[in-house]
Length: 268
Image (cartoon, rainbow, N blue to C red; front, side, top):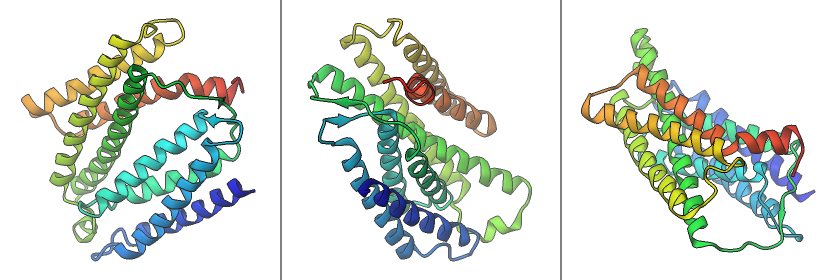
């Protein structure tokens, strides 16, 4: 009962925050920052309370795909909201708030019952998981910036005058932040893979080989984007599409098999 209540109330506040930003997206003064922050903070705190109740159960820790997805979503929401306090991120806010609201509702209908009685702390494994987790969050945020860049660039090329009077950030600012995030995320992913190859013995076992290969392909693409932008001046649509494709591969590497196993086949 408590879980359902927290889910619906958090969904309500995320929806209000998203709706407010969208309604004022093309207004010259933009969304009301105080109201947006108030609504999003309420949603974030309720989301956090929900996570605590979902993960820490009487039987142990529930680290199912649904709960991990909700946790990653929460980290991204907090990151984008924090960034928006200092840098323009108006277009990203309704995207992350809307996705968070949708994920909360979807989570009610997906099975999640992986219970760990106890957690054995292995520093090597913990380092690999933490770096992978952080790299994924940063690169997904970079992908959101890529979507924002694509949207603004397309409107400018169409000579849409409304974009000039909107509260959207300047294209050059979005581009700079995009490639900074890609660079940082690629560095973290590099460290995560190195930690995995050094400390883990099963990176190429049958159970994990698809994750390793997809992660390496995504890493190679992100490295190519970073190198091409820095030394060849790559920018624009091709880099944006490469960023989105690499993020998709990384998502498949991290969650693809677990989604099939836990959600489609209902095997735990």
